[in-house]
Length: 303
Image 1 (cartoon, rainbow, N blue to C red):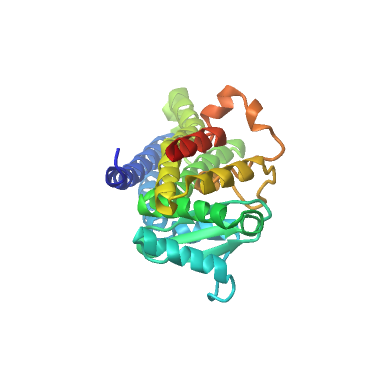
Image 2: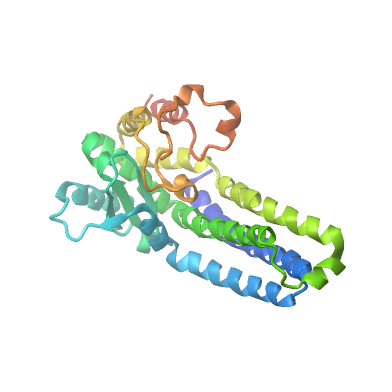
């Protein structure tokens, strides 16, 4: 698969994801409207899903940056070395200069976001700046530029808002059952137990389906971004060393959320666990490929 093919596939996946989201929410709205005996619920679900799809396209990057607690570098003088590095890589990659954000976290990590290369953002943690040398930092930032060039950023960022909304809708329904809401009670009784079971199953399974959509963003994109970064810097070893150093660091990110974990350069929830002893089942639901596999692929490129 070429880089150009990957760009087209990611654009297609973005629209497919947004369509799947609309269908899931509309389906939930239909089930809940039948259960509560109110067609208005379906109408509200359609309107809200459309609004959230639009919001996720235009504002998901701002939402992600707020969740991360990132702040924009006001001027070049604030972080001159970082600014020059990003500027040089943008010229080399043939991409517009992205905005640069700093995240006040001790854990070394980074992510890119934005709806397209012209509105891209690269965010790095303070820990990343403090712990990596120049070649390692350049490799990480080149990796984020690869996500921008491959159009991964829109796909990865949109899913944060869409998955969160499906989870909220499901949570609202389950809470309404818990508190014994009486809206449409007579019609619910007429619907019988089948509709209740169907609605309950939809409320429970919808967040799981949303999570699977999130995991459907293939981990192969990380390998592609690593390979693209190595081509951009012409020094795969820099990125490989950065991966090893970040992989050994067990500092957890304070403000990272499960919905945004897949955006980061490396898993932000490592904590004190040993990646070598991660259960095989847990690996199936990892948002990132194992560090050792990424390092191996990079060093094979250098041979």
